[in-house]
Image 1 (cartoon, rainbow, N blue to C red):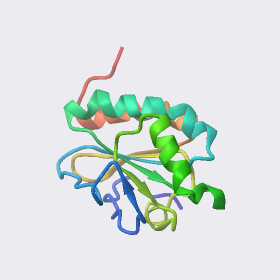
Image 2: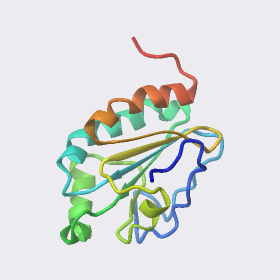
Image 3: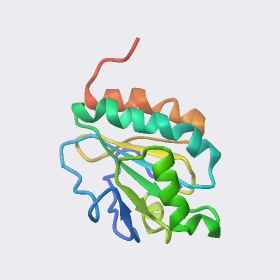
Image 4: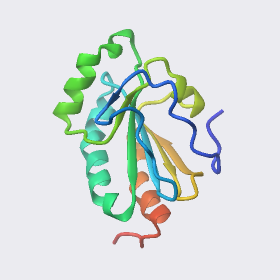
Amino acid sequence: MPMRLGTPLPSLEGVTAWWNSDGPPQLATGKVTLVHFWAVSCHICHETMADVVAIKDKYAPHGLQVVALHMPRYAEDTQEERVRQDIETYGITQPVGLDHLRKVADRFENEYVPAFFVFGSDGLLKFRAAGDKGFQKVEPKIREALGLPAEG
């Protein structure tokens, strides 16, 4: 059963390595948080990654914090060099956790990549979606959680 709306942001404990961060990111309370699950073998993840990075850059000044969690789908996805190459190729600058044991994914009750979880400034889940169709709804939900007017 998927995580219910209103659920508090789960712990990120269990990540085996962090990239773009010295250990687990210090997520500020009182800020909107986007948690994004992806995998190196996922073509939809690759197709949406530039947009995820653009959303992070666009809304960071408004208080958005973003964490990416690499969740392997296949054994070969656990090759850290492949993850590092994707981080470089797609210009991923947010903290990236390797959830290769799926401990965080289990806490999020998530089995999909890409998957997106938006937590409000109160730390509670406001929205969740998966896939490219779900991703289309992420930015409006982030704007709503940040208290920004809907775009155009």
